[in-house]
Image (cartoon, rainbow, N blue to C red; front, side, top):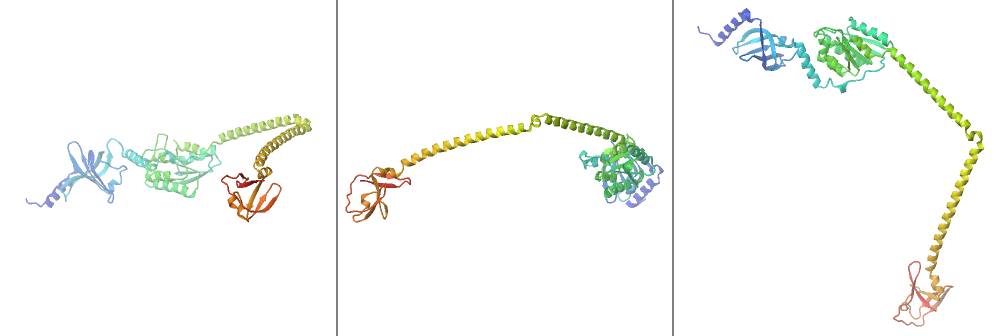
Length: 418
C-alpha cells in the first residue's frame, strides 16, 4: 500500500479520534514550555513526568474558564482528548479542563492574584484611610434581598440612628457581580454620597465569595477616597477585598458597629464632659473668689493712701539716685575739662609772646628766618598786646638756628626777642 504523508497522518488521526478511550482522558504531569498567546487566548504547553513528555494545547474557549494562570513547573491534572495535528504529524492532548494538582484552582488563583496586587502596593498600610468617628451618611454595597442589609440596618438603628443609610443594590454572586460591585463603589466615590462605605455579603463557599476576589473589585476598593469597611462572609472567610479595604470586619453586623459609634457610649461621654466642665467652672469660680477676698483684705484696699505713699517713697528714692548720678557726672566732666584747658593753655602762642617774643610776617606769610626778609621790605610784628608795621633797613644772616615756637595748628613761628 502506497500512501502519501498526508494520507498517513489523516489515517492515524482517524484512528485516534475513533478510539473512545482517548476522547476523555485524565493526565497528571508537570507543565513545561508554557506559552500564553495573549492575542489568540490559546495556551500551548508540554506535560512531562520523569520518563516522558507529551505536547498539549488549550484553546481560548477552555482557557478562559480557569481561574489561575498556569506556570512552568506547576503540577496539574488535565482532562481532554488525544488527537493528531496532521500538519506536523505530532499527537497531542487537546485540554478541556485543568486543575492544580494538590490544591484547588480557586485557591491557587487567589494566591497568585494576591501576590500580584501586593507587589503593586494595593495592600500597603500607608494607603489605609481612617474611619470617620461620627458619619452622617453610611453607604452599603450589597444585595437588597439578603439578610446582610437588615442586619446592618438593625445595628445602626440601635447604635446610631442619627446616620442616614444609603444603599446601592448589587449582585453579590455570579459572573455579573464583580462589575456591579466595582461600579457601585465608583458611583459612591463620584457622587460623594457617603462618609464611610460598607462592602459585603453573607457567608458562603469560596466560589460564592469569588466576586470579591476579582481584580476589578479590588482596584475599585483601593482607588476609593471614601473609607471602606470590608464585610464579606464570616470571620474565617478572607477575600482580596479585605486586604485592599481600609478596615476588615469579621461580619456585616460587626462592620456596622465599626462604622458608627454607640449612642449609649456617646451619652456617657457627654455626661462625663458635662461633669468635667462643671468641675472646671466651679474651680475657676472658687479661685476667683479667693483672689477677690485676698484683694479685699489687702492693705491697699484697707488704706488706699498707703499704696500712694509707698509709690511716693519709691519716686523720692529714684529722684535722689538720679540727682546723685547727675552731680557725679557733672563733676567728672568738669575735672576732665579743667585738665584739657590746662594743656591747651600751655600750648598757646600767647604764652610765648608774654615772655617778650614777637611773630614776624610779610605778604607771603610767616618769616622764620632772616634770609626770608629783604632790605626795604615791610614786615608785620605781632606782640601779645598788639602789632607793629616795620621796614627792614638791613639784615644780618648768622649760622645760628633761630628759636621756633609751634602753634596749636602745628605751624612754626619765628620769635624775635626785643
